[in-house]
Structure formats: C-alpha cells, structure tokens
Length: 238
Image (cartoon, rainbow, N blue to C red; front, side, top):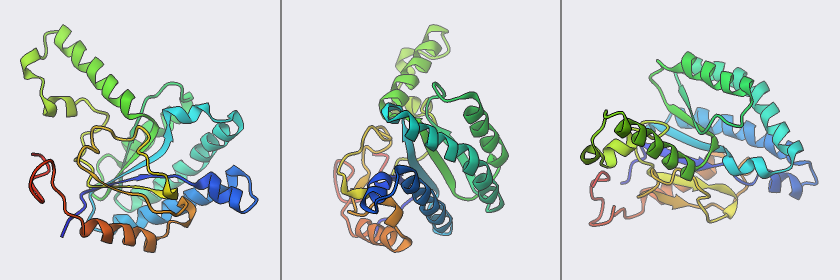
C-alpha cells in the first residue's frame, strides 16, 4: 500500500463556494481558512511528514485589488494567532515563495513564524505564499549561477541533488497532490517536486473538503500503482 510522506494541496474553490451561496468572495476565503486549520490539525495526527499548501500564487496578484487586500488582511490577522496554536502542537512552519511584492509586515510575519517554530519536530507545514514553480526554478538557477561565478561550485558538480538544494525548501518529493473544486490543472505549483506525484482532483470546493473527503482521496492514492518512470513502486528517487 502506498504511503504519503509529502502531501500537497491546492486550495481552490473558495470563491465558487461563496458565489453558489450568494456570498462575497471574502466569505469564501474565511470559510476556506477555517477548513484549512481543521485539515492541518487532522493531518498533523497522521503519519505524514510534510504538508505543502498553495494559498497564494504569484499570479493571484492579478485579481481585483479589493480581493487581494482582503486576503492579505486575513493573513495579517489570522496567521499570527494560528501560528501560536501550530507551535503548541510541535508543528514546524516554513514559507515558500518570493518576498516581492509582499508588504514589509507580511514578510516580517513570515520570518517571525518561521523562527518561532524552527525547532519543532512534528508535521512540517510549507505555506506556498506568493509562490510559482517557474519562479522557484528560476531563482534556484540564479543562485547556482552566482555560486559558479564565485567559484564555489564547479559546473560538473551540478546535478539534480544540487539543484534541489537551491529550491526554496529542502523537502522530499510530493507523493500526492490534491486540487479541490474539480479543476484539473497544477497551475505552476511545485513543478520540480511534483515530477512523480499522484494527482487527485475531487469535485468539491475547498470549504466543503472535509476530513472525510480527504480520507477518500488518500484511499484512492493508496490503491494506485506507482511506477516512477519504470516498474511498479520503483524507488521514488530513481
């Protein structure tokens, strides 16, 4: 039976959930955050090491300013309080993504939460905030180029492991990626880490993605035949 070491979730469908109920997008994001807290606490009790959550992409800045401002407000007001609960549960929090054009207080909040939880030994929660897979790989290439320029790395030393060490976080590859709302796209999410992941697209908007729905997705994953480019259940590091 397949085991999950790294679970990734694209949080999708908050706005659709709200629209279907005649509510504003902000109400959908509020409910989505409540669901995210519930699921994170539930996942922390399972034998899963890493949870990566796509909460805000680099492209999301193209949305209406009112909605972007509200999402930033939610992060400011809720993440600090939530991080205190996560810290009490021995959960380690990291953030993946570019700092620009995030405002200074958001960047400082990320740094504060990361520092506060860095020694925790439980679940690692990787919040992908102002994140894009293309940006991550591009930024890694720039860092490697600088190291080569400074003669700290030789060209012949660059392999997949070396590239991985320059990604935003040093995390294992994703085993299962879930995108809620029924949309069947990965939308520039963890492009390197998703290379051999199993993908699941439940037709449920995120605020309705309960623990029971999560367990259904995990059960589907456990029954799949994983090949990693070759034979069944071949070593994922090939």
